[in-house]
Figure 1 (cartoon, rainbow, N blue to C red):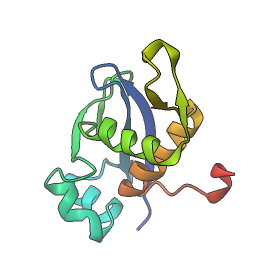
Figure 2 (cartoon, rainbow, N blue to C red):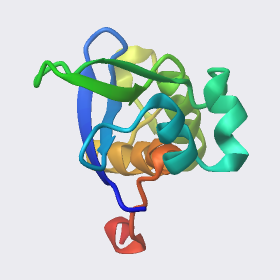
Figure 3 (cartoon, rainbow, N blue to C red):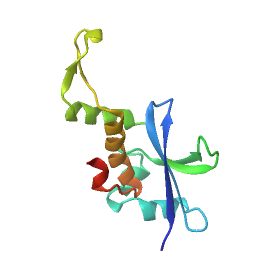
Figure 4 (cartoon, rainbow, N blue to C red):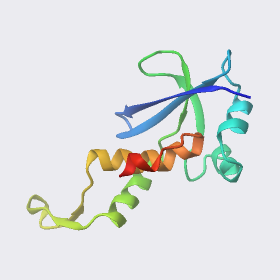
Length: 132
């Protein structure tokens, strides 16, 4: 069975992180059950349905298009990305913060890391060339 999936990245001002919105359809929009069975890998299904590590899948109006879209809830995104940044980047000194060690990542690197983690949860496969 073929279906189309549209993915949109929208910045959440309240959570201060990107949010992955998506819609899937094959003439008509996929139902909740079809979303879970067609897009979510079986090994992640229970975590997603119980709002586990990656958060849950919810539906609300797209912030720009104002039509119903599914999205991955962003409640744990900041924590997840902080752990990625803290373990993958060398420490740099910031004199404005009493020489505390800060870890920084470029916006492009942040989006790539974030998308590689959350996109895969809902069937968004990203080619390795995107990361080179």
